[in-house]
Image 1 (cartoon, rainbow, N blue to C red):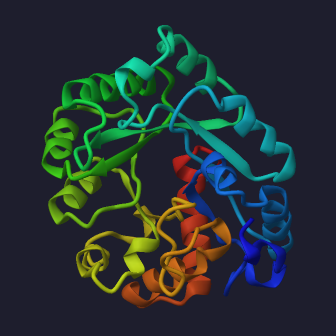
Image 2 (image 1 turned 30 degrees about the vertical axis):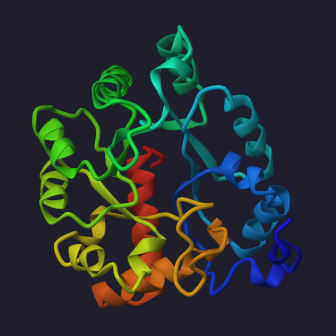
Length: 273
């Protein structure tokens, strides 16, 4: 088990009350033997805000929902990640997905999108799956969480062809200026992960020049993408302060002023206020 999980004071580096995490993965953190119960207890003691556990598959839903009893402001998204191949989708996956989305703690749909980095799933299958998530979003008016990797042009084209009843979010924003412009035109949110802090991520930081404060969300994508100076280790929501600090610096705003703005944005996205 990760040693830093036994040192509670190091679990929330620079953490400030009200910091939220708009995208992380409980089950992936558990697979890396993180102490989730201790993490939630520590975050609660630190005054953390809303946490959103994003879905990547359907068969672990009950295990994810179990953790709602351990953290009052924990919410969920349900969906199938674009890297999940078609032969792994349940035969009745649409029925299962709709059932999960109807759970009162499920406030968003996803993550879904297009991923051409590894192409575990052919692009036509990814688009079919993306369309299914979109159609359910239109029916339920629950917001979409988009995963986009090495598929910015394809995703721009897909977004421009559609209308949206509720705002979506571009999770772990990759830094493409045109993608940001299209997303903002559609009223979407842009979510920044720990990679915005990386030295070679100037394009992601530059995008903050055109993204207004009322469209920004902050995430860890834990256990992935630990921010500088923790890059290379397993990530978790207690390390999100580094990402807040980076965004605040780029936007020339105090972290204490950024926190309530992001909280307001996340509540609006999830329709919690």
